[in-house]
Image 1 (cartoon, rainbow, N blue to C red):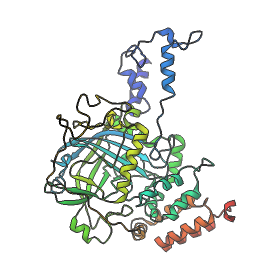
Image 2: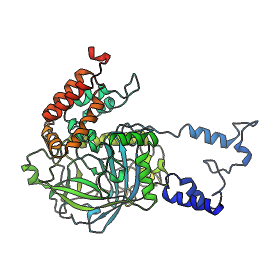
Image 3: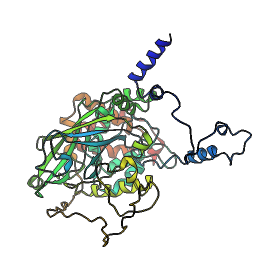
Length: 508
């Protein structure tokens, strides 16, 4: 009987390491791993673990643990608060040195360590992995030239172009400040006042709105990045991460049932698959444009609310991303994982669009607020393949060696670190951006990229979210859906009439 129980335990652990993490830890240790201590290293005597009838202030175990516990939470991310993540590597499979001199692409077969984080955008901490929402798809490449971050999405386009809209987007999608509830009126008010958002939300409301596991979720860099080769020649690329397991999504009813049972569904699947050796992989490809292609393009190739047509700019494979290692400690390695579009390396200049510029500020400021000014000294954010010579000093921990005794100002005459010189330096392209207008691509998505059944489910999902909104917002939305395609607008309008429910705010 005892052997039978042991076998069941081992089999259960192999099948579901996420559920059996504690059991697996116990099985690989032979007993207590050591004598417990305070954070200052002092050993704790057994009697100090019970404070009844003793003096609390003189009990260092009590003082140390209680005062630390009330400080364990750090500020939640404003968006992308819930996430799964893992570590692995990127391997070059195709030579692109003719367009980009970044060393992570220097030769076929080269491997670069990566960290990845996948996250619903709007869901707050404790929310469901299977909510209908866009997802963040962020990858940190630990290159020999420093960290390179792609802070992307699971949609090939973004909501809006103007970064000043970000606070409005966050406030309108988050909970109402009076009721503390998600509000259909603020949601649709934002969308209908920024109609370029409808392009992306055709995907969110469609079959691609709820990924069935992060290993089935694609990723896109969103921006058109400017890159240069060794000769200083400019090219422009969009990054695509296509899951080798195929793109797979959940229907609304499936997602609701799963959410009721397991709010951490996607995070659990990711952890379990990696722990069982079933490593998720993505094929990394680029859409590549020359400067002449940019000049002759029939669309604004830097407009983040639009996609670059694949028939005009086909995918060029670059490599594989493999995630083969779970975090040992979620808080230390995933919650503190800090991405920034400003983390670039020689050969990759970033996007010339205003949104990219705005995100460089927003992400950096978010990390300063959440993690402190030394967030890049947190181990998971350290550029592990390059040596750091900076002039930043002091501040809140972690500090590592705080620059030791190296001079702390630049320029100096005492052999402190100096900048390198690039005699073929290229400046980021300066572009003029017009107001967004992507209805043609939204129309193309609806008519040519969705089947009849997909369009039917799209309408159902839109009606589910639009029905609680005020009538004037419904009317504004219907007008925009009509512009995208008369068939879509008519179906939404008819659906609202069939399912109409009078709300008190309709009279205002």
